[in-house]
Every structure is written in structure tokens, then in C-alpha cells.
Image (tube, rainbow, N blue to C red; front, top):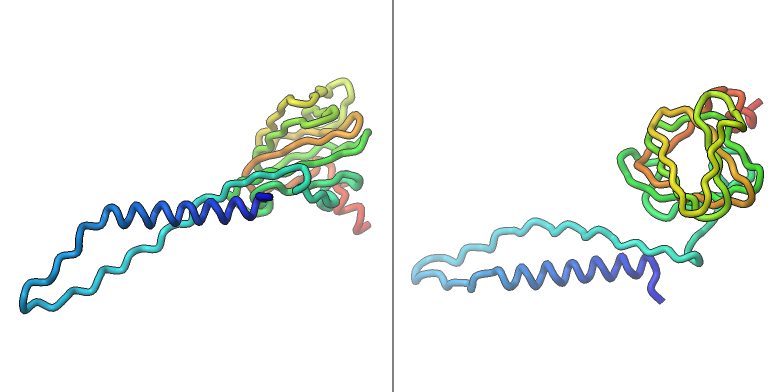
Amino acid sequence: MLNVRTLGTLAAAAAFATATLAGQAAKPAASKPAQGEAAKPAAAKPAAKAAPKHVIVTNADIKWGPAPEGLPAGAQVAVLDGDPGKAGVPFVIRAKMPDGYKVMPHWHPTDESITVLSGTFVAGMGDKWTDSALTSLKAGEFARMPKNMHHYAGAKGETIIQIHGTGPFGITYVNPKDDPRKKSTQ
């Protein structure tokens, strides 16, 4: 069975083979040095760049783990691609939240794009959680929170969302008392 690693290796091998064949086809026939001339050494070729990897993730490939300490306990996350902690690196992650899960008002240093995969994701804008201001999003629906926008979010029923963006992905709570990282040190 092909998996993410196998496909990346196959893609790299195919790219290398294509580049090698293309390079051979483009080479002019070697000419012999004229009588009395010394043969010139071949010029060094620059190293070929690695081909971008092709990523395919099946449900069986997803490795769920506990949410980072910046989120309330109870959620699970999985990194599908990239590295959310590295600056300038694109990433795709999933979050699985139990019914009634809430992330109090916060903001991110980078844009956050969310697609709801299952359940009902709720989100509101502002510095204070207000139930009447929540918008409910069902499977297939999308939300984008620009960097630094104050918002809050939660789940009705078990909910799975997919988040993509460019790192570093972090979270800062509007009210520091809502930050689970601070609660664990108090």
C-alpha cells in the first residue's frame, strides 16, 4: 500500500529520473580535443533541487494526540502536513472537539482558515463570549479569521475542523485568566 512516505520517495525518484533523462537529452555530443590540446575537465554541475513531496493522508494515517497546552483540555489534534510552529511554513492540522468545547476570546499572529469536516463549529467575534453573537457552521462550511482578529469558538456535538495557514501558529487570550497555560502554573 502506498503511504505518504512512499509517495514522497516515489515522487523524488521520478523527478530525479526525469531530470537525469532531460539532462542527457540536452547534452551535445562530446567533441574530441584537437591534436595537441589537453582534454578539459567537465564543469561541475549544480545539485538538483529536491522535488516537492506529494502528500496523501488517509483516515488510517491520522495520528490524533492531545491538544497543545494553549488550548483547553479535551480536544485532540493531528498535524497532516507542514509545521505549525515554523515561521513561513504552510501547515494543515485537524482538531477534534467534544460537545460543549469552548475556546474563550483569543487571537492568532497569523491568518487562520477553518473548514468544518463534521459536527457544528460555532464562532463569534469580539473580546467577550456572547452566545447570541455565535455563528454556527456545519460540515463543508468555511471561516477565515485574519491575524490579530479577536474571536472565540466552540463545538456543538463532537466536531472536527481542519485548519490551514502559515506558521508560526500561536494563540493569545484576550483575558489572560482564560489561558490554560497560566491556569496550570497557578
